[in-house]
Image 1 (tube, helix red, strand yellow):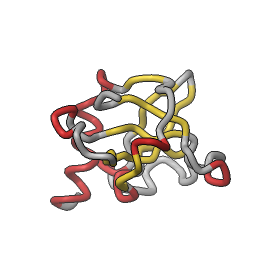
Image 2 (image 1 turned 90 degrees about the vertical axis):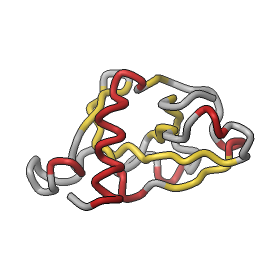
Image 3 (image 1 turned 180 degrees about the vertical axis):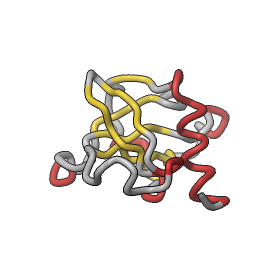
Image 4 (image 1 turned 30 degrees about the vertical axis):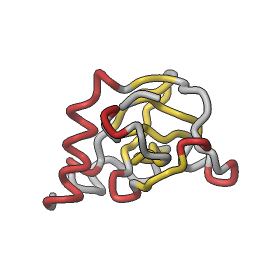
Length: 105
């Protein structure tokens, strides 16, 4: 399990709105049984409805998804099965979105 790997949402009932999670936790903390993960949402608000740093998007398997950094959670590693993609190339965008939650937009 690598940092920035993308996994299907383990909660089937939430997959329509939040199809994926991206692992943000550093690989150096792999000893822990949980992973800090950010949900990726299907667009539910018009462009510009949220502050820019909280409304950034990424592409997973051809679908444009909205970052949901305010909903980050520690997920049990065992729930995250096989990765479906990686967002390593979007690391700066992911880090910026999480920074907006921590330090303000």
